Image 1: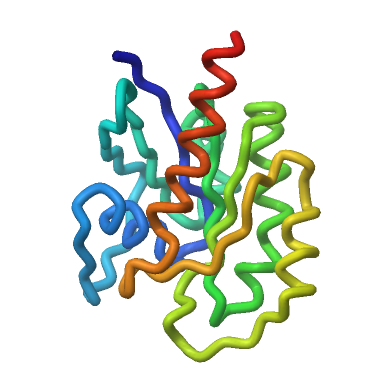
Image 2 (image 1 turned 90 degrees about the vertical axis):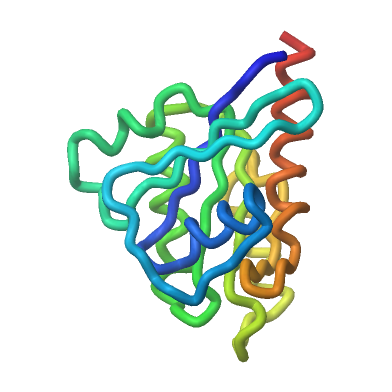
Length: 166
């Protein structure tokens, strides 16, 4: 049995906590509670325990933020399909993650796909090209449990493959 750390990064209110809660507990709440600092959840899959770090939204300028990223084996970047500025912030989030953990695999969740939104397949393809280590860009919904497991399991599979290769 081994454990590893992944970190969810994204602006405030994009649904990081909801995605984690859906994946770990298979639950969803309409109540919005902003994460302050960091919240850590864990889930065991096969022979590994994933330590899932949920960090608050606007921490880029706090000196401690990079400490939260250290030791991560992978990242899930989350944007809100209803707020274009959160999608535009993805490149900054990638840059910040790579400043701390070079070449870690990334999955991108375009969250709240259960709500009316406008994003083209071309835009999704452009997002997937933001970094060579982006494994997948998925339209997700924590509320409807849309692509949540795929999001986490894609990252889990890649991390386990890289650990076996070491």
